[in-house]
Every structure is written in structure tokens, then in C-alpha cells.
Image (cartoon, rainbow, N blue to C red; front, side):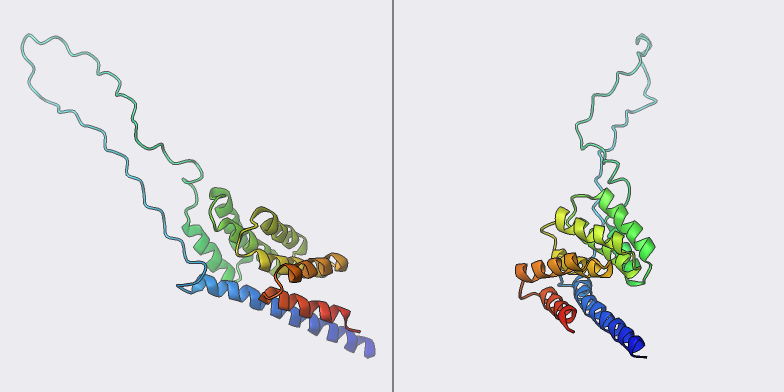
Length: 215
């Protein structure tokens, strides 16, 4: 009975820590939902209008002694804007909004796929780092911790200026702990605390570390 109670207590503590981490994630979600928040739904880009080709008049009477009509010369090359690239012809920026909506509804496989499509189509978009983070969240919520680890590491390494970096560092530390890589998890959480000691993520990291050290 004592062993069972101890196991139940450990499970409850883990659940509490996971809930605290979700508070940080929810705060980032509020930023996406609030009109004045850090993130707003993306508006579709304005379609570029190409100049309409000139239409030559037809059916005009020809003089009786007019020479036979020669084949029309090839039109000169246009100097207008180049056609959109293949990436821009695929998913539109609105896909991010759809992916985020699917994530909120718990459709993690679908949301992760849509976030991936957005990243591939718009690799330089400011939302690309956000997509990488939410892909990690999808995997974490499905307990696919190895995939979550890779996604959170990618946020930190590829998008160092992303607003999701601190949340990614926190979730990376918790992911290491879930993978039983305790030393790596502790080191990651301590590095987060040192880098941003006054952040909400650091407060959660401190609490998690204190529980790890508790008897």
C-alpha cells in the first residue's frame, strides 16, 4: 500500500507540473487570440494583377492593293513582375490560422501537418518559429517525447529571436525529464533560469527543480 501511495503521489506531482507548464502555453495562446496580442491572424496577401495583354483590332477592311498579311511578330518580352514561386502557389498564410484552430481543438496530427506545410511554403515568415513550437506541442501532448524534443530544439537553434524560445526551452527541459534524461532536463531548466530569471517560464522551472530535489 505504501508503494502504491508513493506512486500515486509521484503521478500527481507530475500532473501538477504539466498543468503549470500548460499555463505558459495558454499565455502564448492568449497572445494569439487577443486583438492587441503578440500574434494576430494572418491576412491573405493581395493578389498581384498582371497587365492585360493588348488586343489588336480585327475585321478592318484592307486596301485592294495591300500586300498579303505577314505572320504577326512575336510580342516583346514583358517587363512585368515575375510569376509567383512554386511555394507561394501552394498554401496561403491563412493556413497558419487553420492549423492553430485545429491545435486548439485537439486535432494534433492535422495541426502538425498544417504547421509543417506553412513552414515549408513560407520558411522566412515570422510565424515559422511559432509553427515549429506548436509542432512540438502537438507531439508533447501525444506523449511522443522524442519528436517533441527535436521540435523544441529546432525552435531554439533555428529561430533564436522567436517569441516562443523561452517556452520552448521550458518544454524541452520537461521533455527531457519525461524521457528519463534527468541530468539533461535539470541542466536545461537551470540554463533557462539563468538566461531569464524573472520570466514565468523560469518560475515554473524553479518549482520543477525544487520538486526533483525534494525527498
